[in-house]
View 1 (cartoon, helix red, strand yellow):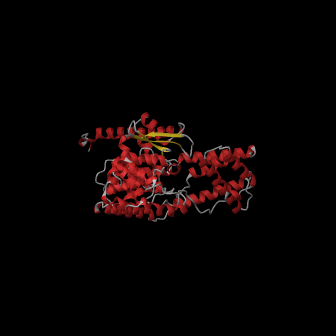
View 2 (tube, rainbow, N blue to C red):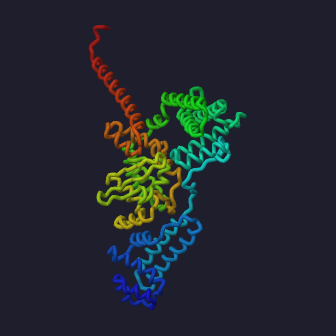
View 3 (spheres, one colour):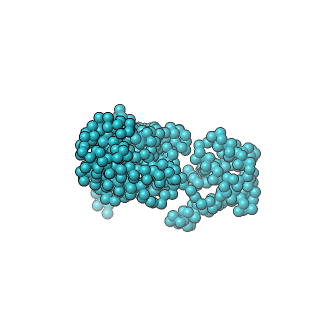
Length: 486
């Protein structure tokens, strides 16, 4: 008997196993696979292990799926072999057929999940470049400035990404118009705006707007002018060019202010957030009753994503880059509350949000999957230790970049960004307390966005008061007897 086997038999939880008649038939490999399971049962006081217990044991015992695709096959072979070895130990010791069948069922279940294949776009978004140039194809002086801005972190990464894309569009439009790629050439800038206006109007028409009345989205042109102005400041263009860039930016900003944002039209058709939250709770309950394991996981995942983020809608990039257990998503045991606490990828500012215990059902469901709730503390500790992503696909990998937006599109008919608008619009009716909550939940650094919603709320409130006053006055004269005037 090897020192390792003697050490296994000395463990208190193995005392009963060592006295079983079939112990002599168990190999050293089988005994090493059996000992962690017996320790698990002793720790959780499981006297008659069932499917739920074996599932929880394997969930906690199997190492996380490796990120390297070449290592996945070795990982699969190792844990599948572990299950088979455990079953042989059960058979050698004469354990009940029900336990052996349970181990077989869980092994098949986990095998299906591991080998499940679905089309995954990856966690990063990609697009086909058709109306812009790559950064490498821009003038060398432009590339030097862009590298300097990134190196010094002059702006947040999303702003730098957008600046590079807009400069790529500038270069493409200039070349198409037969003009040099130069901010000093006003005709090149005009060519860019002409192309943006044409593409934006064409998209509006494709989306159902009247061709004769369709307008470009001025916010798109304003953001382009804003990036050109930012870049020109660091690139060192002449004063006359800076004046022109600033004038165009202010002009498009003024046009944007006069145009009702598309998100406001979408908000009128979308269900309110309390309705969305209620539906998420129902969908979570319905997911539990779904027979197909992959479909059950997908429905549970979507319900939890909506239920959690209805109170704190994140940006899609933060879902991928910031939401990891123990690094962005936390559990506060002293209050029995979950929390978001991370630096936002767009602004770099902190987002700190504690969720009321009523939201625990969604976080718990993401952690447990099909496991029994009594194993929640151990599974949660494991997820935190492994820095596991909050949202995982059925087979164990992180969700794609566009997944979060599609989940919200199914719920409200638009992307997840509209959920941010709906939240602040809903909270505006709660007064200053609502504005403060919205600022915290949406991660706004300054007061500009809050002031915008304050102004919108004031206008809506004034319109309601005027409508109520008019209705009251009309009601007052409705019952007047005017027969003598006829």
